[in-house]
Image 1: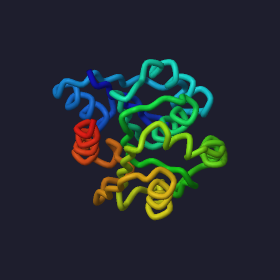
Image 2: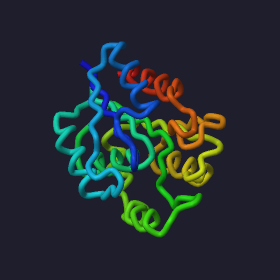
Image 3: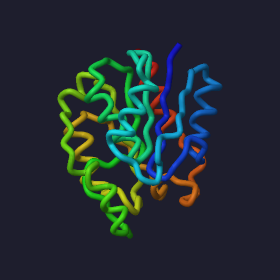
Image 4: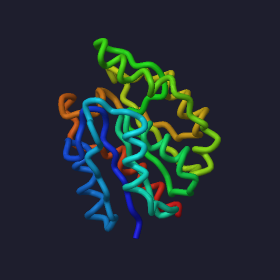
Length: 192
């Protein structure tokens, strides 16, 4: 049976809009879906989040797929860097590998800093899978579209999709479904 791990973002939870919808859609299609609540979600730390995902996804294999939102994408990428195992593929929604933009306070900048400055060995990450997809919105208030699009393409060989006016894909942005991410995941699973 194919598994999908859905990792929410900073300040998020597994039952928020698009992630709950994705979980329901994938479950209906026969996938086993694991959507954990990540630790200390208001203050995400690399070691805690990657460590937690490592425990949850300890049995991940080539029939395992990952969907991440925002900082959840980095968590997945950093997990793959350390795990040393092959997985089926990854769909990143509003992922970021570079500085954030928008109205961030001092505390948020301090939380984001290690995620931005701690290097990632992308060659190790690419050994885990060649199937990366990154989905962005053209009006995301936090994620710099062109910079991140280029990084995901160059560093991970990701196939890129850009949705129109979905913000950061949150309920506040009116996003309760995510057909682009669902289709991308289904396409990845059809390859294997």
